[in-house]
Image 1 (cartoon, rainbow, N blue to C red):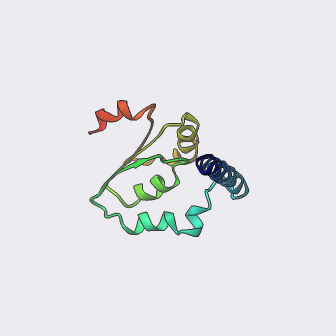
Image 2 (cartoon, helix red, strand yellow; image 1 turned 180 degrees about the horizontal axis):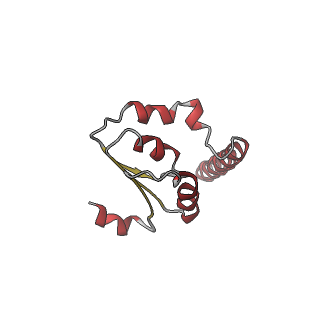
Image 3 (cartoon, rainbow, N blue to C red; image 1 turned 90 degrees about the vertical axis):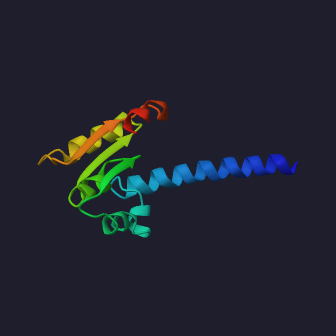
Length: 115
């Protein structure tokens, strides 16, 4: 019985986390609240140097990668969702950022080429 309760509460937690993230993002102009609440975005900006080469895995809409490209030597941003890459390219292509590239990555198996 306890095993089933644990499974149910894990499912419920997962479901409510996804629903909360979706609704909060919709309410916050497409930006996940973690960026504002945890100062997530600024943390990465503060810890990047101009000589750094950055790989942003799971870049979402590309906002962090875009700001990192202003400071880092090179930024490569990848995401598994084509929609995220399309949004990032649309949002951050004008003016072009010379040291930032965006790509869709289907699976981790094909990421071996990056190493």
